[in-house]
Length: 423
Ligand SMILES: Nc1ncnc2c1ncn2[C@@H]1O[C@H](COP(=O)(O)OP(=O)(O)O)[C@@H](O)[C@H]1O
Ligand SMILES: [Mg+2]
Image 1 (cartoon, helix red, strand yellow):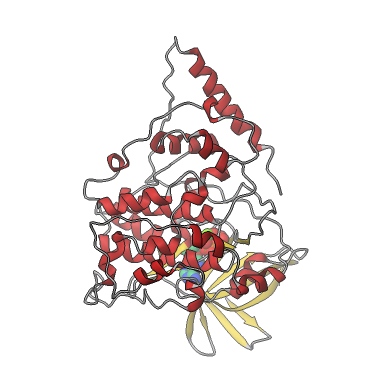
Image 2: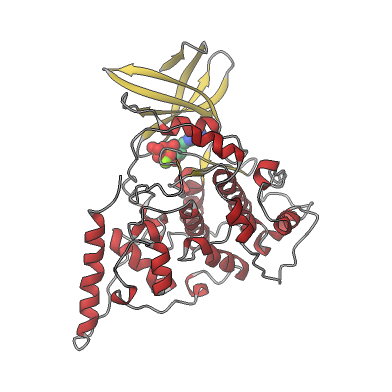
């Protein structure tokens, strides 16, 4: 199968399927003119709308984000298809971690450090330019095991969030969906991506999703069974417009987080995960601040190599744009020369970051661009054979009628929310 792009004179030959997502088919392809290997993502295009995935992917320029090389349309049986020509990256974090799981092996710690560092760095870049990915999950993280480079892909759900404007809450794949989205909040921020990062981080150690809910309400239950029921304040911070009080929900005490991780998990990792999985969106650790966490200290060792013996990918070549608005104390800690004592857990103030968020010049330019396509609903959760079905049951003793009542209220809260989403 060949695809010509008449405007750039390039002809692409599809070689094999590279992956199948929920919305697009991705091919490994070759540019016939140059023999270069690329990936082509083919998506059905509604001619009434401008394609937001294309508009956003076009502006992205970062080592840890997939790069758009070309784009063109074809018409087949009167249907229009958009083709995004991207760097070809052979693996995904999802496939990589499943391979270890299948062989009953833990992912080497260094790989987790290298991937999580790059993921957080990429998230910082996206948020700096105002882009919220809204579907961060292992299937959307491409990796090249030969170089150790990670790149975020799939901007089909991404959006430039504008403060004060509501957005659809029914977004992001369920297991990685931030609690404010589950609660139906439409005034959420880019902080939803940080929650997803925390879920992925935990999954790399546990070998399966940390919160494997089977539907909207059990997803919330999975979260509160581990992290404890949020306080009333946290609940309000997640769900600003709600008139419901958290006291109407079942009460769970927070678990000791280390009890759900394998014994070999370093305490620094659990500490950082707990700082990403905060109920209050603004309490989640900022992505570059997370990169200075002692968990990543080893990456600053100049003699370090990948488990394969290859050199580490570039990790510290931060551009001015990436560092703009980042507090100086964080910048100082980011550079490799300043190694961080690993026994010293520290958390830096987020205040300066808050001020800089959503305010770069670059972002203003992007906002001037209007993206008109309709919102994309989250894909159905793919059935994952590794995930064990979790049979959630709230223990209700016959005497405790109030608990029963709470359970009814809990589920009816989610039923009501389902029909009241914006957009
Ligand atoms: N640039 C790429 N190089 C190689 N494989 C890719 C690339 N982009 C996507 N894929 C593969 O295709 C799958 C689906 O792509 P994605 O962009 O996530 O589509 P969807 O929007 O349908 O989820 C990914 O999970 C990955 O396995
Ligand atoms: Mg995808």
